[in-house]
Image 1 (tube, rainbow, N blue to C red):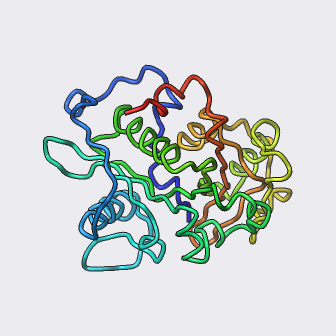
Image 2 (image 1 turned 90 degrees about the vertical axis):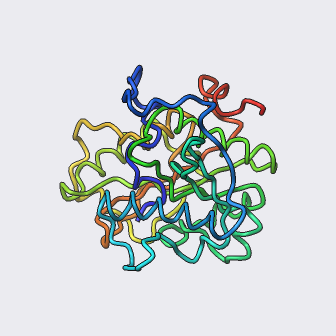
Length: 267
């Protein structure tokens, strides 16, 4: 299952223009607090939001638990970005980041479950993996989304990291034809250079599917591509969740200048 696409509205600001925010949930930048979880209780707040969005709202098949949290073994190794509404102090957005030294300690990346990442091994000391992104349904506005991305960019700058990877999923409700057509479109315009290509462990059978549909990337993936990310080859097939998963890679130095002012502003 994708690390990055369970919330389809994330980065909506980057895929649409001049979208008016719902009147009842307009939020000023001064009403948003950007922080990183400092203890288990704060991590749990992020996990509770993830469960609410992923399981309760979007129907993901997460392990049943009375705590109503989304968690896995990598959470203990990750740094957890939190966006709070300063009026209520509740967590309204989150991302988790697996930094290089913690990836070594864990022994794997989430993406390792779907791709052979050997060609990226030389980047390991400066590469982070991001995932489990979500925003509370009442706060899916440009301000919150920009806060998440600004937090990630500042994190990378502070620690001297240069590369960000993460999985992005595409639904396969049509049997995979949309995903196959999207893969063809990505290969023509957004493919990484060959030295960064990865091999899916269970490839989507692209050549058995219709690759000629007129398609656009889903909002999240479109946002990543607009920022400057590339896709590292053909998608993997996740039969358990019926998705096609693309590995995206983003070098901070390659950020689209149009968005750099939003994400790389010094605090």
